[in-house]
Image (cartoon, rainbow, N blue to C red; front, side):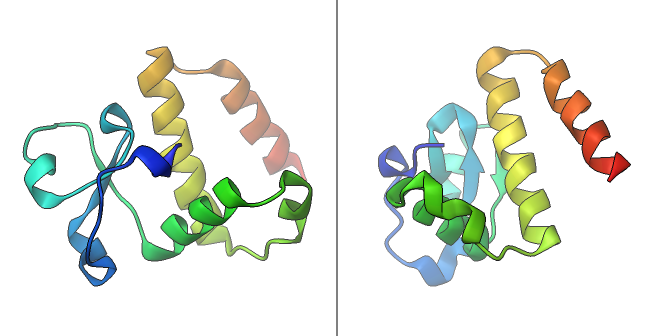
Length: 103
């Protein structure tokens, strides 16, 4: 997810009205949302973590303290992005989720 190329959001306080669109490459405003049928809500917390990941050395990521709910939201957004661009369900995602449930 490359948020650098996302639609410019001027007021982060209005994020509740903004959505994430894989087809548009990131955040979209309410006006752009009317032009697409494939968008998802995104929380401010998820946006902050995605931006941090984009700007951070990947070796420091294991030290992030993310709630289960936020992790699920981010996995869902990333999964929808992969499905959009690949245009099919990735079986390895399902396999990895099954392995996680075994823990």
